[in-house]
Image (cartoon, rainbow, N blue to C red):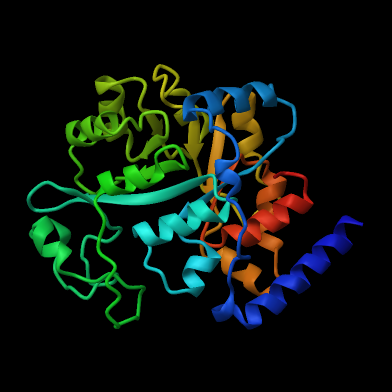
Length: 312
């Protein structure tokens, strides 16, 4: 029966993919995210760990929108890491967390931008670090390979915090982006976002945040259980990112991490495009791995599949 349900789901997704440019959300749908208060992120982690109790199966898989991308946002050519695409993720009602990239401008303003250069996602060409915030504001954001003027501006992290506050969790990717720890920590506290934000970076940077405030959640990347154990002294380290091994028959890393009392997070980026043609092989591999958080560019398709699995 489950195979039949997934066959139907895959067929339905393939039909939708045929006319992807015209995909729209149903009008008048109230965002699920706003139907009840969200627990703070640390409480959510503790509650999820307790429910798992090392051996119990997951009750829910959490969906993370990569650079705030969703299928709807991509289809409508809304720029990644923009306030506009974050709003789409919030309104979808099925995205639990947005992953955002942060860089400082020449004059120290933290803005959302993945690449060192603005070239790929705006009509500019310089590096973020070589531009003042005022100069960046003169640019228009766009999706890769688009050239039309959109009127969409590169947002500050503070603006993103104001938009997301009380609505959706945030994973801040600052790895290799020269973000001053004190500046970011102060902004998180100033905006009252300690309960909603976690920070992804190298161990050296993440430890700095735990020294500043142990209540700031950190999100390390690890490839071994031993590496995860090294974070046990840091109260903000509960959710760990790792690389799912799609080329192996089994991947027990998430299950082994659960036995240690840790939560896990991985992504199906690049592989998730197969879902547009009704191929859910890679997503099923993820489901079988028993990971807790999944990062994707196509949250809607992941949600539909996980719903059939009883994980939403």
